[in-house]
Image (tube, rainbow, N blue to C red; front, side, top):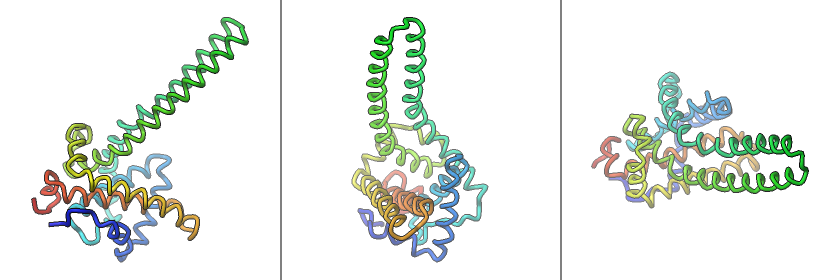
Length: 238
């Protein structure tokens, strides 16, 4: 049986303990660089899913090989679909609001010709846009706390519908609240360390960012390994 709590130190050690960790992180960094065109994000997500499964199974060297790009791509494509369904509606709202206000302002200016009315509408639109951005930021924070659980359950159950089972995903978080919070904290620490590594050690930003994501995925796998509902699927004792 695994220890009840995640080992934070192990989260920073498991990558360099892999004999081929430099090659794996550099390849992952290259795909992270390509994430701007979504293709790289598919491979990164597919790799993350395999890392979660291996960590959940207690593999001492959980970093997967990059030797099955087709399978990694197929896994990542489904994971990206889940992520986009959650994130895109929230991300589009402020853009749609800004466009609507711009069109309304242009119509008001053309119809009334009043400079004062246009200025008043512009001030109200700016205040409204700030409010929308504030609400969007809060929703994005909530998604950042929730989506990893949805992706972890989808990874272990291997069905897309699991990513959208909100009640079950929240139950997974509640069952493992301390360890799940530890996993997110570990990712935060890894992200800060990655930024410092870029500044102090001239490490590439994309390999460092990919390393931080790997730390999160390892931690999620450790959470799964301790979850009474998902651990049997990971091959750990119930």
